[in-house]
Amino acid sequence: MSCQKRSKVLSFFTDFFTYETTKSVVVKSWSVGIINRIVQLLIIVYFIGLVPVCLCKAYQNIDTGIESAVMTKVKGFGLYNNQVMDVADYVVPTQGASVFCIITKLIVSENQTQSFCMFRPAHACFRCSDLLTPASDVQTCSRLLQMFRPAHACVKTWFPSLLLYFRSPMKEAENFTIFIKNSIRFPMFNVTRGNFPSNIDEKYIKTCKYDPVHNPSCPIFRVGDILKYTNESFNTIASTGGEIGINVGWVCDLDQSEEECKPSYSFTRLDDVFQDNKVSKGYNFRFAKYFRSPDGTEYRTLHKAFAIRFDILVSGKAGKFNAVPTVINVVAAFTSVGLGTVLCDLILLNFLKGAEQYKAKKFEEVRKRSPALPDVPGEPTTP
Ligand SMILES: *[C@@H]1O[C@H](CO)[C@@H](O)[C@H](O)[C@H]1NC(C)=O
Image 1 (spheres, rainbow, N blue to C red):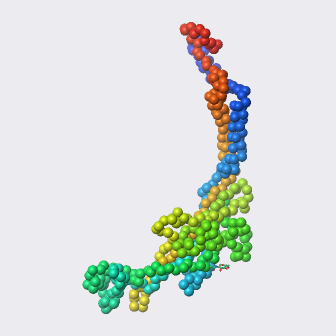
Image 2 (image 1 turned 180 degrees about the vertical axis):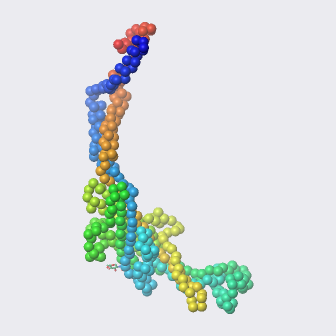
Image 3 (image 1 turned 120 degrees about the vertical axis):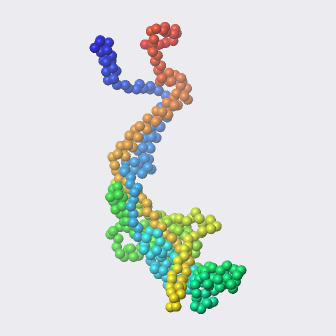
């Protein structure tokens, strides 16, 4: 190995094992100094004070994948159209799911049968049995009717048709109560909770009514109160129908006792956006009950029901201390303090008096001295 090669290798190593450090320029200027400290202070205050409070615990692991099960039970008696209505009459579906309807108004059309009707000029209707004895097949019946009134279309339909007359809603529905049983689980931390304490006594649960101030943990809600919280009038919503959301929100800090992990309830009218529409206001649906007369004719009773539909929506998140987000946020805090420098440099080098001087100090120019070319006279060169 030649001597020259060896010295090259040596210089490579000596160049590699070095430490570089940045040279600082200290600027004794009040204005930049004050700006620098203020910016640093703001960043520190943000990370120490605001991040844990506003961004919901930057030092915690957050679980938003809440698992939930809801069971409901409605109670109360109503009086409608001289008939007593109990839960089996006015709750649809009856299984006690998280979505259910309380029927508040019913329009009933009794003893409908399949008949041939002419829609013009009037609702004139013929039963085949009125024309033929015994009733033959549909085609014959239809042909016969066409012969009677050739100018008019004749269709087979349920008759008499539903007459939409005004009915007032069931007033007692205002006093019905809804019992909500909600159990949830945060899978990340394997924490299970219920929406009311397990040590609640029977007497309390039989008598209590939910109230956001005096009784926030009672799981029994009066329909009238729910409508009051959504600023809806009972009479309006009960006669047109509507959709109400009951939100069960779980925001839990599991660094505290699990007992503190309680739900909070809020209420909204979900179909509010359609209230100013000309069409499809409110909520209604139809259902029928079928029966057969002794002579074999099928009858039905058709109901048009106006109902308040309740949707129970469960959402939530839980947080628990974890080292990883804590370290990430602390590191982020320390690095962001450096942001102050960027801002101060910008001001220092562009807007301040004497910016040129600062620039010259900060960016020191070093030129490579070439022995072949003579130095430009008058211009200082770095040694
Ligand atoms: C609801 O209950 C209250 C108190 O029990 C009663 O005064 C009121 O008349 C009831 N409302 C209806 C519509 O039945």
